[in-house]
Each structure stands twice: as structure tokens, then as C-alpha cells.
Image 1 (cartoon, rainbow, N blue to C red):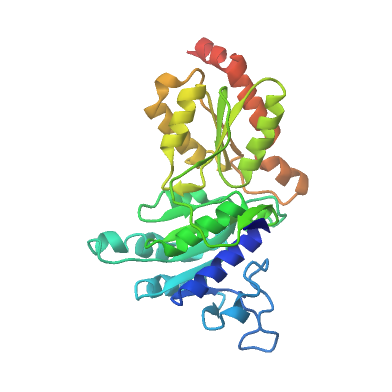
Image 2 (tube, rainbow, N blue to C red):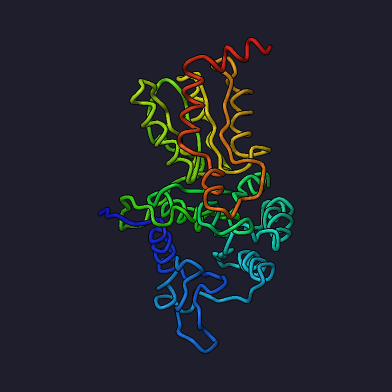
Length: 345
């Protein structure tokens, strides 16, 4: 039976169900319990935004508050995963990955390779990502490309509660390290979510809207901006394929190529900066694999190459907008971009 859940509650339920199913699933993080071992109320926090609140009462032997040392507890989680446990480590904000990047880059990502396939590292590192929360430049970045560049690490970024639950359960059960990224501005977004446990395989993009004129490819928060743009364009007679990548490594390039072969036009949307972004990766892959299908140059809509501003008006302008996406798609379909390209060439 399905009922409406927020992404925040869907993540909580996924962890709850997996901890009940498998006692080797544990969780480490800063203030995920709150109060334990110190004056204060047990289960007072549940993480900085309360995503895991209530889990300690159900699974007191599986949740552990940690010191404010990302290098320590991320390293501990990675080590525990090689010794029979399935840890979930909550890295409060993706921005803090710089403190523990060595453990991810040089240890977790390489264990299977360096030990001839005999070592498994079933660890999930959860982190909040993205702008729009008025959290300033050190708590608002979209650093997804930095993780997708690493062989040996899987990267997930859901856009809705149904996907969040299914992909997190899949991540917990996977035998490789998974970076599971949750856009903080989507925590309250609700959709139908089944009560029972289920998984969503990696590398299976979701075509959330079908159309024959232009392909809009994105993930996370900007999927919703792409859908808003598609609604606007439909009123003008321009019909969009909207593709939610769901997982960024591995990525489902086949679905993207199939869409572009149908539409002939592509707009890649990414909240990360343009240089070496997911948008740039998809654009380059399509140019390499399906250039003959393109009727116009590929467009990228990304954030500016600048730190995330704290000013509310500037931060809102920083995140790719539905208007910018619609304008790019409209330009491709009307032929202005192709004509400009031919004149330049």
C-alpha cells in the first residue's frame, strides 16, 4: 500500500526497515542520536535536520553518535564495512567531504581493486547537498562531479521520495561504497511511497515526461525545474522528454541516447558548476555517441562558476531556473541556436 511521504520520511523509513531486516546495518554520525552519553534527552536530534529522529528508540544498538571529526567516523565506517558490517555514515553536509576525502578517494574506492576483487566495502555515506536553503557558501555546494570522477564509488541523487526509499535500500544492500546525496531543499517534497520494502536498481534513469521535440536531462532538485519548464513549453506546442538520471555513477547513458535519437535536441541541467559537471559529461557523451542524431548544438544550464551566495536574491538566481531551461529548449527548437552555430562555423 502506498501513501504520501516526504523524502525526509522516506529516508528514515528505508533505514528503519533495513536495520530491522539486517542487524549488521549500523549508522554513525554527528548528533544522529543527540544527548546520548551526555546531559540531555536521548534521540533529541536525529541529525541536523532530524532525518533520522526516532530510529534510536527502535534500534539503540545500531546508531552511534560520533565526535565532530569526519575523518574519524567516515574512516571507522569504511573499516567496519570490510569486517562484516553494513555502515551508514551521515556526513552532515557534502561540503565537509574535504575533511575525509582521503578515506573515500584512497581507501574505500580502491579496496576491491587493490585486493583482486576479494575485498568488499558495503558502506553508504549519506550527505546533504545543494543550494536554496540560505546556508551560505560552505553548506550549499553541489559537489556531485567530484565523486562521480572516482572509479569504485557509486553516486546516487534522488529527486523524489519514492526513488529516495528504493535507491537507499539498494545502496545499503550494495557491496560497494555508495555516496547517497540528498538535496536539502527537497526534504519536504512528497509523493506516493509503498509501505513495503523495495529496491530501485542503479543505472536506470526515469523518463518522467515524454515528448518528441527536445530532451531535458537532469537529477535532484533541477528535475523539478525541468518539469516546470516542460509544462510551460507544452503550452507553446513544444513537447519535452524529461529524464531523471537518479544515479550518476553508474549512469544510464542508453536512456539518454535513445531520447536524443528521438528528439534530436538536448538540454543538460545541473546545479553543479559547468566545468567538469554532470551536464558536461552527458553533453560530451551524447556528442560522442549520437552526434548524427543532433539537429542543434547541445545546451547546458548550470550554476555560475562562483561560490554559492548568501544573499537570498542572489542564491535564487544562482540555481538553474525553469525559465532558463525553457529558454534554452525554445531556442533549440526554433532553430536560432543552430543558425547561430552555422554562421559562427
